[in-house]
Image (cartoon, rainbow, N blue to C red; front, side, top):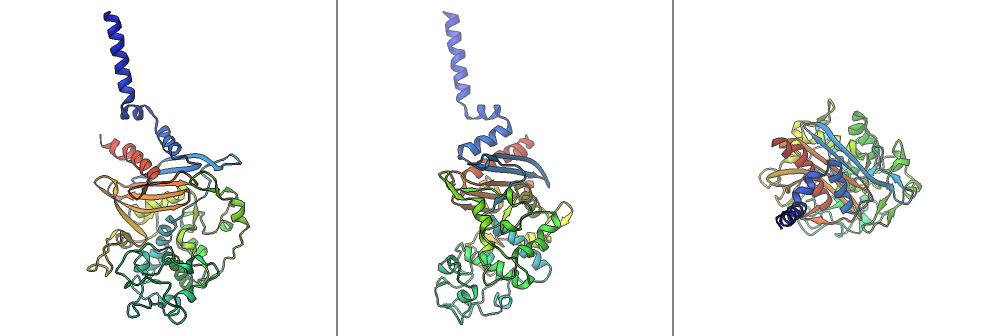
Length: 391
């Protein structure tokens, strides 16, 4: 009888320990925890790269680059960044500010060569700072969607109606705008005198040996691009379709105003290296990309007193501030989504942690504004490389 009771108690203890949430996690390796996060999100193909104290400390590549062809994701796979494109473009724009080519508070009319005004508030210039904090009042409307529309026709006060602007004074209201972000690429082209891909090569990518482009034709190995997928796992865009679309590397600011909103293709390892630069002092691998003053600008909250822009916006120079990712810490960076695509580049400067998540398709859904799979992977990185090291 005593033996039977002892066996029952042992079985109960075993069942209780197996049901404890922490117990199973402690038994899993880091790779297994990461793979579980990808699998639970029904990820087609993904990559997870972590940097700590200026060095990449972990990389994991998961699933398929092409689902039907069963081509696996590898370190050579290019993923589309979606809206993290804006953050990377912001590095190039800040470098131009460091070089004295751009002034964040100059009227963008100066750079585009025609007068840009919100017709409701003709007395208020629109600036780069406004565009990069999503407070420009440029409306996410038809002009951005119609590929035949020229930028000047949409923005020139002498050519357009009121339809491309919200009825709010520029700088006073936060409204996320892909159109406004795209305009920054056109400004880059007019000032640099070359297409945005060539400009970003000169400003950012070449110095670090990064192969990245806003059009797949300009990549060194376009056959390594990933397919993209919808939330239900069906195909969103096939690589061969992208490769069929022509592109001419010319300076065409009137036509290229969509590229910097979400078109960048890059390898996860290289995106993480850019994260290292903006997490620290603006440098990575011995190359100073942007100044420490520029880094401070990226992290500075806006307010009427400091920057003249409403403090409603969480963005400064295409860099968001979030207090809901790691408890008790401010995290910076950007998130990108499109159908099933997920991309997050987040950094926490106090502990010098950089997290890069790139997914070509998954069951994407948000948890308090952050993609749940990225939140889970960030928790894993924090536990493994920061909290675990403090114990």
